[in-house]
Image 1 (cartoon, rainbow, N blue to C red):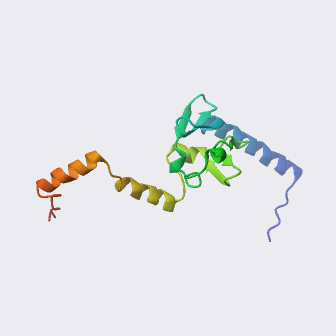
Image 2: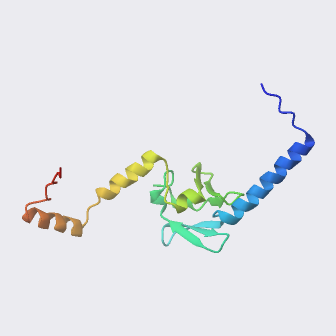
Image 3: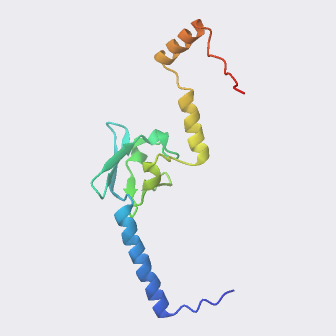
Length: 144
């Protein structure tokens, strides 16, 4: 094992660097000020420290999909403002990840994506019928 020779001066220097880094992160990265579940719109609403806000449907999020209203309203902002926490659901989410559309693990996101492609609607069914009348989907051509 390596001897680090941690002196009081080194420790104080490292703490000072960490505080500077934290201030820079607070200034440049999104931090939540408050959060609540809006029952009317069925959305989680996040107010950021910079005055902006964003919202998302809990059904998109791993761990929140299918959760009860009683559980969804028990959301809190983590002390750093970097995340959201639901104690009753044992769910923790990162604000930066949510803002770029990451709502769970890769497997969860793949499952979400596959649901989008299999969605049905009247318009989609009508378009498929019209395509069928024209001979269906055009065949792929291979260029050499």
